[in-house]
Image (cartoon, rainbow, N blue to C red; front, side, top):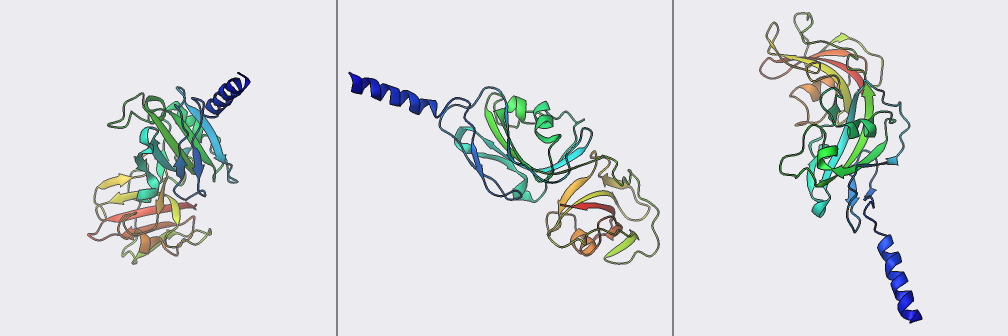
Length: 258
């Protein structure tokens, strides 16, 4: 009888190691695509937050636009839903655009360089709206790498093309010289921009219309044509005009390199 009782106690203890609110295990360095291992058992019914790595950079503040990489997976089957690491395009999180409160708690007040995990039902952690094809009650696992927070009007260009000299030097014309670090190919730059269809043409896109600065990886296919050549070698703090194939013009404020 004592042996039977001991076996029951061992089984009970074993079950206790995988409670309903067990969190996934995440490995990999900040800035690299995280590897996510799910525990045995059911996920928690309410959102849970865990700081995996504490960064050393400035804290993001209320009102900032937060730039981050994010990996999103489903708990069921540990299936990939979306990943900014796969497309070399960090997400720009503007908190006045119907972003879930769970994202605010995950990203505001964090130091740049932090890795944060958010786990919970899709309806509460998926950001603006539930992802297509995922029931609202299904659990998602989100891992954020916080690149930094920036005021929406940091070196703001606005929605119009500024006055430009003629002719514009190629591949880029420096309008305002910066004194920060020199931009290298493959770097992640934080920038504001205005895109117009030629000098005097209509503005077709701008970071201001998207809510503020964005983070861009300077490699072909990840940024508009002309950016890699035009921004390489420029310094943080510069305002640069880049002419793209077809005559389009981008005016870019290089705010930071992360």
